[in-house]
Amino acid sequence: MELPFNYFFNDRTNPSTLEAVTGGPLAAALEAYAQRLHDDGYATHSGFMQLRVLGFFNHWLDRGGLTADDVSLATIEQFLRNRRQSGKVRKGDAAAVRRLLTMLDPSPFPVSASPPSAIEVSLKQFQQYLRQERSLTEATVINYTPVARSFLVERFPEGAVDCRQITASDIAGFIQRQASLITSKRAPLVVTALRSFLRYLLHRGAIETDLSACVPTIATWSLSKVPKFLPGEQIQKILDSCDRETVPGKRDYALLLLLARLGLRAGEVVALLLDDIDWEAGLITVHGKGKRVAQMPLPSEVGAALANYLSTARPLCSSRRVFIRTKAPLTGFANSVAICSLVDKALERAGVESAYRGSHLFRHSLATQMLQHGASLPEIGDLLRHRRPDTTRIYAKVDLVSLRSIALPWPGGSR
Image (cartoon, rainbow, N blue to C red; front, side, top):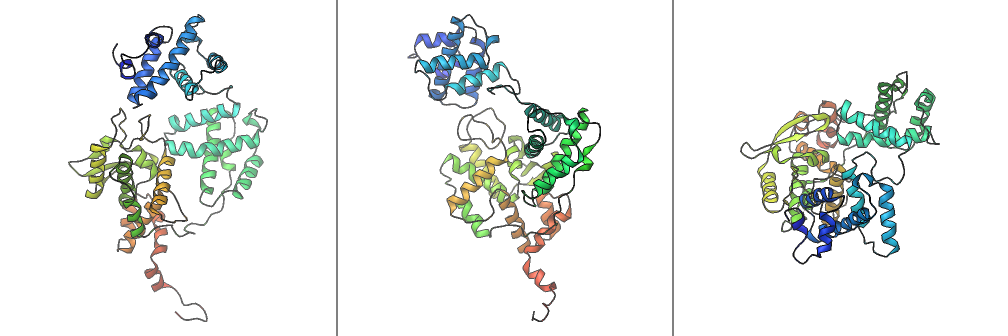
């Protein structure tokens, strides 16, 4: 027997277990499943236990005269029910069998216990539109979807969706209620997401009038807040908290350095590929917001941390992502939320108190440090890859020395 099965099975494996996975209606699918387990870096015991229960499922299908085409949620639930009645279900068995179904039937809703609702179908189609027609990033899709879901649930509480019934007053009422529930920072996102959803409905022909023009703007004030940041010594304390003798520590140190020294966004760190690092030229390619691509100089400190991680700590896997999960499946991080969670853990580990959390804390801190060391706002904007100068102007608020020099005297007081 050749790979992938012999990676998880050995000479002491029960022959009946081998027969259960190498024969029967799912033989080809189980070989592909084993290969995926191997490629994703699952430990030998974990892979063996998954293949073992799938072998039982394969044998159960064969005894019942069923084929791979008969595998469905219903047959899976029946198999698991029989296993529970005999007391043979182990933790992870259900997940393994359902994961196999996604390989046999890669439909959009493979693991749902019931058919998707009309709202979920609409959202899936909206997401497909954002990805394929608009070519928007996955982060944008993730941010827009909850807004569209909230609007549909509020407008169609019974579940049946008829977009022709949407009126301008429905839209205005939704935005008015959202304005009292969300922060000023999220307000523009809600407005933009709802407009995008309504344009999608027009594109699909679900509505006849462009209702996106009916979405009112939630009043916000530009540059109304001071950016949250940490002083340089606290940033260094967070970096020093990484245990660079361990695999997770080497990965986290390199990752946090990209945030702290280059001001990368969380999504940009997630998307970073091995091919994006040009070691000879000392450059790193960053895939930013709106599909924009920029090359940035790779500081020696960051390059050394990346090289150390890649050569001594990054697990062997098929993924081309730079940063890989430490546990199977050995793939890149799913989204920017994982990076923000990693940052939060680093702050706790270092004992650094901050009212503001998340990866942008490093970005704001880098800009603030540059300003304090004499960098101009255009220079900061270039490093942070801001499209508009107005985006960078908020950092002028933390330059207290310069602001004091132009401040007017307080009436009745002294300067």
